[in-house]
Image 1: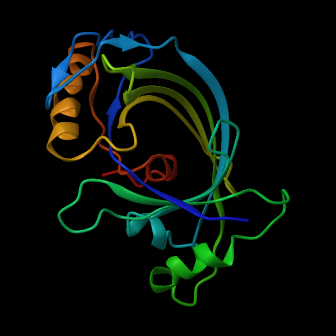
Image 2: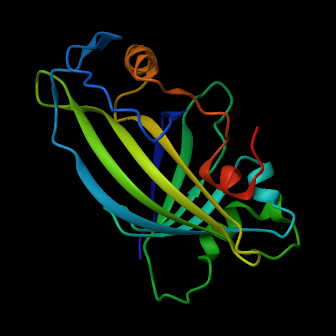
Image 3: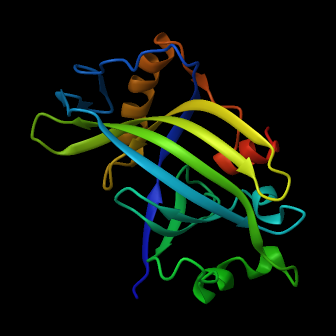
Length: 212
């Protein structure tokens, strides 16, 4: 089974249940122009997040999850941005059996945070995700606007939280000043539609009530 990595560059927004996702056709920034928005695609995602009892990973801006559904099912480890970068390193491993343990390779990448504490499942997220791909005039992918309706359940206590959020994520290969310029331009449109920058570090932090 192979490992893959990518750098995730995105911005997250809080939004209420009545807001309509805006049409960003014509939005320009960083020398990039949104020429077309593809039809929305809806996927159902289910993810189990792992952490220590005292939530050492979320405190370190690190998330470890096992996701089912969508085009990127598998184990995902998101690490904090490196110095001078806005993107988070994301390491993927493919799924195995339903009761499989955390892959050793991913455990090794968080060993300095976890120390000798054990990891276990702490949160279950069920997300209805609607994805709209933003395309440039040459047909290349520029970014996605992701509309998530989320139900988070704390494992053990059963406490449930629900919210809606939008994410604007750059496509692979779109980065640097041009990517930031496009994100700035799209942000103007989504904020005009009623979204505000998210106050949560991650879905995990929000689901656990560890916001800010």
